[in-house]
Length: 237
Image 1 (cartoon, rainbow, N blue to C red):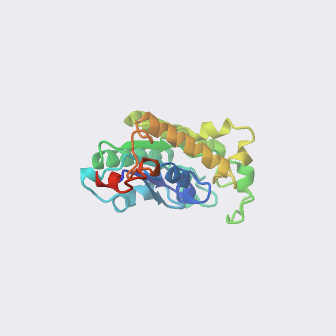
Image 2 (image 1 turned 180 degrees about the horizontal axis):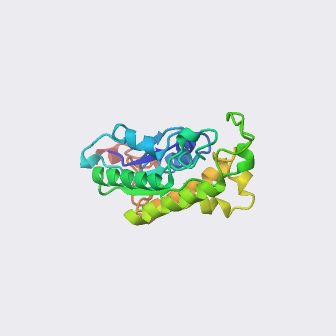
Image 3 (image 1 turned 120 degrees about the vertical axis):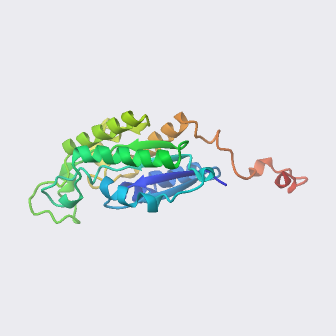
């Protein structure tokens, strides 16, 4: 059975299998060695993620444990409560506790699985005001970069408390010149360049955990390994 890598998160994860997305890039990277399984839910926050975790990750035998799970929530938790979309808001302390509970659940389910937290990305507030899908009557962005940064810090704190790795996407993306347009297409969701940043960070964290093309051999022989004089011989092993 092929190893599995689960991607658990909100719309930034759900969209990750779009062309140029970080999830599709992972699937391509591990094409012959592991299955990348999408579990992204647009609009979800950590509160709702906790409610559905058993349905998302049904109890399985230990032999079915994925090699890794990414947990990528916070962009919706950090919505300003008294603005458009405020029903998605989760208070900062609860957000951290929810992450701790999600980690505890995954560790109990699969003790050997590498869990990787990803902080919410930074927010381009000016671009959020231009989003045609937001019914924004206040003239104020429903998300702010300052708020996203506070949630990113709590995400990192939860990871440190549980001893799991984390990707500080909020800081990493802001190190790119012109990150507002280079990494974000609508002030929140990722451009192709933003997806590349996430892909490279996830690959790096997987490699640090011993999960790579070198440690996950191809499930079937490469064509170069097939003996032209006896093409079926390698399949008999």
